[in-house]
Image (cartoon, rainbow, N blue to C red; front, side, top):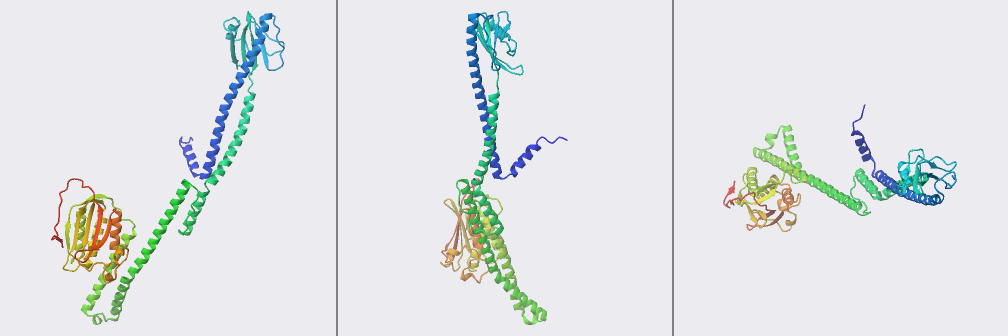
Length: 483
């Protein structure tokens, strides 16, 4: 059964990817040296072959000229041929009739070629040719002499090339082995910081200890990698610290409403078991107790929702879109009225377009209105103003309450922070911190000041965006209220 054509390359690719970086570098170094040695061998062999051929041909021409001089003096039929030395040079005389004369005991040369015969007939002066048809190849030089021609030949000797190739093979093997060892050593030295980095990462993963930074060593890419991992560890430390603080603050904030809720429920259960619930608590007391229970449950629900919002770590999963901030403000004011019917919101808004996340921005505006509603007297509305100011969309929410003390201003947007004057009011201390996070995510700025009515003025500046088309400016007057 034949295998699919692409299976072997894929298998080789998977095998290569499973090798360690050190092994890959070693294989690459050895392969590069082997290829270099092979190319060098090919080039050197060609150069050596050309050099040997040139030398052999020069020697053949020199020997032929000596023999041709003798043949011209004595005639090709009578010239004295040198005895065969037993190896190396071979000679032959071509007579005018095409026959040949060779020394006694000399091995037979290949038959005279047609081109060599034409040299003997005077068609050309000389000829250099090769004959590889027999077991031994010959390099034959034919030179015109008198009425015929003389030939000097040598057996083509590949032994120098073979010896050179064998030597290059040994050198190549040594170079490949040496290259593999050098590549292994270089890879080990070069990857030593990576090994230490890996060990440190494994240690952090096993111990969960993020406090120790990895030593900054090496240079170039290695150093940048170590610095990046140290920055990642620092970010993880900050994230863990933030999670721990969030858990501690959440536990602290949950303790008071849970304790109060537990005490009230235990009181009801104890009186019910004794059968004295109706006699021990008047109708007014029961109503007040039930109202307290409802308020505590609502406070816990609000706190749980805000904790979930803060713990998510991002503003929202919704996408950014181009929107009119007026629609967001009006929707937030409507929600504030539905949640707390007694709150009165006076709107003075101008159409301003921004690029943002609608739900996150609405939550931020709602938190601002809710915060102002807690402080504003019943006969004084919460004023919400929206306008364009330069390249910014400016949102201001102010109340007629007592305002924020100067000592509390720097911490207004901190998580769970509540001024001493706000301890008795409902809330978790997370609303304004969520506002700060939403504003930061949109590239804006949040600030607090004192309003002209003596209360708190919370201001949010967001980068404005060009509207998708010419939009008529619309204004809702100060006397317009969302009730």
